[in-house]
Length: 302
Image (cartoon, rainbow, N blue to C red; front, side, top):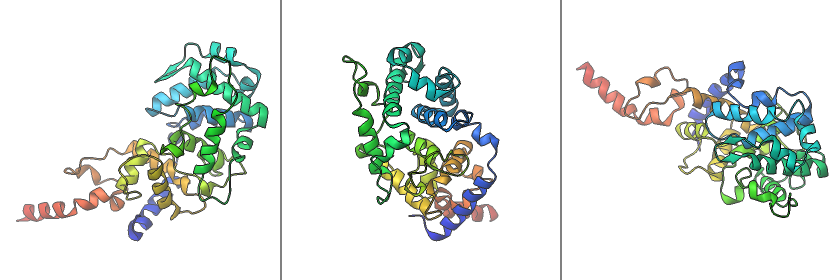
């Protein structure tokens, strides 16, 4: 757990980043495409779809998300509800992003269509497994994934779950579930830049989306002592952030992630680039090299 002095300084820095956040932050995030829709139903479908492709370099993620959403037309929700598996397959026939192919997108959207047809929204589907008395969203997220994968087959020869394993990770398996936690942050949190579409889930239950930037910043800033990425690390970082805001700990994710993108941390044996860094006062790596810097300064002063 991050110690009190460093925690107070880090909270001030993160709060300042949140206050000073500009359009440039959103322009390097796939959430920009989701926010371009005005209808809440379209935003929910776009958010879920976009989050499923949030893997890899952010510029490539944005390009892939834009392509997937553009092919849906002006209303993602209407496209999903009014289409079938064959139309999905035709629409995304030539789509490729990393290990995802057009048929994977078709199966994902077919599952989403079944949810919308049976429950009306992803929120209603999610809260069937949500218990507000549980400390975090983990168990509800596991039930959501299990429920989605148990949906009836699209065809007799192509079970729906066969194309969804890469999209729907499960905290029960130790996964950090970065993309699903990102989706939940977008639709649950009420504050900017998130959408606040869902009213049935408390932001206090959310878990930080664990990407490479949050992992690096979390370790450097003492938010976690864990070395292995996964659900336990995500819980660890979230618990540290709850000290800053118990009701909305994940609000700091946007600042942490984008700060991690902008900072090019030097190696432990070369701290010259740390001088202008806003996080230096809180950084455990900088603190570990203090004796070496002091020794070097004394040697140069002789």
